Image 1 (tube, rainbow, N blue to C red):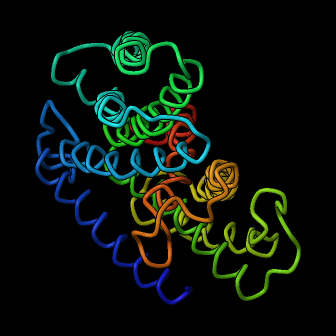
Image 2 (image 1 turned 180 degrees about the vertical axis):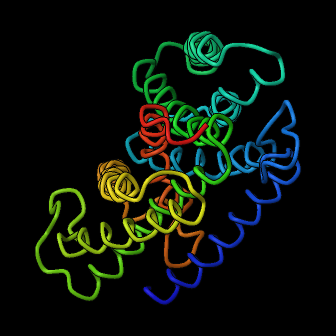
Length: 287
């Protein structure tokens, strides 16, 4: 398991980094020497939209275990549109806040119409509730990944993603080797405080390296970033574990060796993305 996790983790990291760099090269944000295009992060948005499809299917499977129905096509399209909360306003010169608020309203009433058309009144609360949750969880949270990329740049995005996923690697590796004291036995018995220590250590190292090499923020602030997002990322993982435990499933799927499903890979960055945006916005370390 550890071997597969490390191999596929490295491969996914390389592919993701390559996608982000190519994306930055195409829209001019890779270097300050190039002129920024008016529309940023197109490839990243396509990647997020692509991942939304299997992620929604995984949520649908988990929801079915609780006798809840995900409106798959509706939820996939809504998730992708909601994830574009910072992308489409570039294209149509809208305010991201207005775009998100109105889209959330339209999605809510769209769910009621879909429920009525195909299921009548039976299961309205459960079905509409779980669909709205899945759309916000996958769409709105991933929209903040795009927001970091568009508002703060390519390197802060890579710093955020690498710090969070490095914490995952540190937690899993250290916990597997040295873990004894349970971190959250009711939700995830495999998580330990020793693993949490490994998550913090590796996250701080990665954050400091990004801060120094890419000149994103002072070293002391990078260390704080690493500590905070090691914990936030692990809490995001625990949140997804609560969903799986409620559905009595160990993994969201078995599509990725060593990881499980797409949800098992993106859970920590999804939860941490809004806080990363807030951190960069409040500290003002990047423009």
